[in-house]
Amino acid sequence: MGFNKSGQNEGNHSRYTHAVACSIFILSLFLMSFSSPVDSWSDSDEKLEPIPLLTEADVQNADPLRNRAWDLFHPSWKYSSVWETIQASGQTVRATRDPFEEAFSDLEYFLDDPSNRLEEEFKIPPALRSRVSFWLQVFGRFTSKTKIVHDRYHPEVIYGYIDFRPHFRATSSAATANYRSDKTEREVLKGLKVRMREAAGLTNTQFLSEYEREQLREMLLKVGGLDEKGINKALRNVRTQTGQKDHFLSGIERSQQLLPKIEAIFKERGLPIGLTRIPFVESSFNPNAYSRLGAIGLWQFIRRTARQMIHEDSPQKWRDPLAQSRAAARMLKLNRNALPDWGLAITAYNSGVGRVRRLIQKYGVDGVDSMELIPTKEDFGFAGRNFFAEVLAVNLLESYKDVLFERELRLIEPYLVFNKN
Image (cartoon, rainbow, N blue to C red; front, side):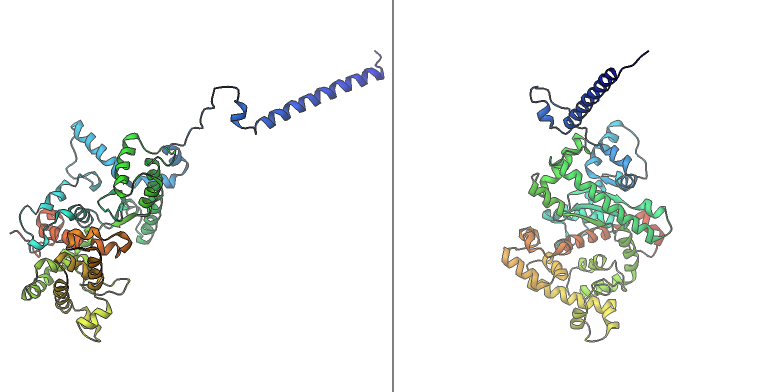
């Protein structure tokens, strides 16, 4: 069959036109993909479906390391819900429970000194009850393989507990376990701060259930509020506190030989015996303790104080536990003469009598119960604000050690002298 040139040109022209039309159509679709959803739907009341947010499970599946870190955190906002569920269901709770599953009611009970073992100066004042309760957990509940996550200025506001014990069980290297623990802590704090902002309604993440969100909101209201300023304040004040139970129990064992001699020194000077428990806080009753700031010995004297109170130039005498105890008794008596009560005198042992006197005069503080009048801008450190509460806590725990630590201390009987008055 013949095929003329004009027919060929018409076919070529038709194919060319079709190709151009296809190109224009494809280009229009491409450009539409960049258009705003508002523009595309301007003539309709129908709205686009929102993009689904990532759930916590999605994040955990995408990042197994973060998943493992968060698994070692036990949020306190989940705790009461779990505990109430167990009680309501009538399930039998194990006789030996993990610390994270307990209600801590046993330690709270001793705040009232039920057997009247404490001296009057060391009874727990109502204004410090919640703060002392926090330190009871630090010294009486959790070991150094655990950290409590809490608010710096309201330590009774506890966000949860990080349990590092699995890291230590997984390796024989303490350095490796500590490295993993540090990494876990950083990841947990990141996750916590995301959830704090979510609870305040400042982000659209979906990590919390409605119940958990309400529990966390209640905590945030206590420490700053739910607006941007309050949440930023709460985020800045998140702090971790390492448990001290194992160190405290070691201190009880070490104190058995020294404590009667130190008590005799304080009795001779007419001082409360409860003051002799300060070394549990300062050094866990270790005469060889040495801090990173250069404080030494049982009572943690710095070099300048040791020169003034013990001996001008004898490091050996500076470390002597009885020489330190005599100097500490003299210093505490001077503090008490300069300050309104023993609570402030003990605080001054940590923070300096000059600083404490200046602050209480400036803000009209007439006793340790009203120390909260001193604003945070004048802060003399976390240790300064909490030192007396720590001393009260270790006094109470040591006085009731036969009840609270009977199982742990059984190994070192009969060397222990239990106070069972």
